[in-house]
Amino acid sequence: MTASAERLSSVAAAARILREFGKHSTQLGVSQLARRVGVGKSTAHRIIWTLVEEGLLEKVEETGLFRLTSAMRSLGASAETAQRLHEAATMPLDHLRTLTTGTLHIAILDGPDVLYIERREGPGTIPVFRSVGARNAAHATSSGKVLLAYLPAEQRDRLIEGMRLTPKTPRTLTSRAALIAELTTVRQQGFAENRGESQAGMCSIAAPVRDPLGRVVASVSVAQFVEDVDAGLRHLARHVVETAARISAGLGWSQ
Image (cartoon, rainbow, N blue to C red; front, side):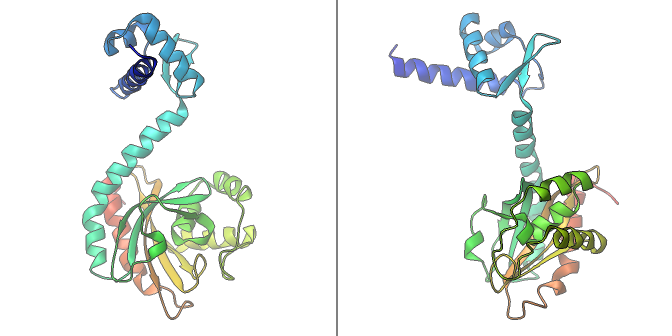
């Protein structure tokens, strides 16, 4: 076997080892993994410790077994959440699209950013947000404000303290005190607005999506260029809030 082929074989074996932890086995030993993946124990041992060094696996001292690191478990949970959101959001988003010419988004919080994981385009599509996977600063978006507003206060304050509140337009909130005050309003009214804060002339409005325990795990929003930025898209607030409630119900949340 050539060195290149051997490396590819090791990568394939590493991938199979990682997949074993997704089959309802949270902790596994070297012998178990070698047997399940079909490689020698020494090969499994070498690959496992390489995965440990790369931060993908960790050894549990109490049991002597291995498990996915918290970062890997979080990644798996995020992927599962995105799939569940897609399934729950499809019909509500299609209905909301009949009520507006704007662009619809489902977003999640990723550090100081919002990450757009779902969209529906209308005639007023905003080119800068065309791609699923695009990011934007949380403090300058309605989606980000919703997701920040419903964090536990300590976590919210810690995150905001570390954020760079970079102005994207003259309307962008750059004061931490002003941002926290607006987040309080968001929780009181149940939706957030962005009125020309991330891009001149563009407004958006967003509402929280909840999981079965009532935790806010995502936002649904409408974004559109408007003539009257001060008025924003508040006329769509009820529709966006209702859409968020339908998606939440699809995830198993009930009021």
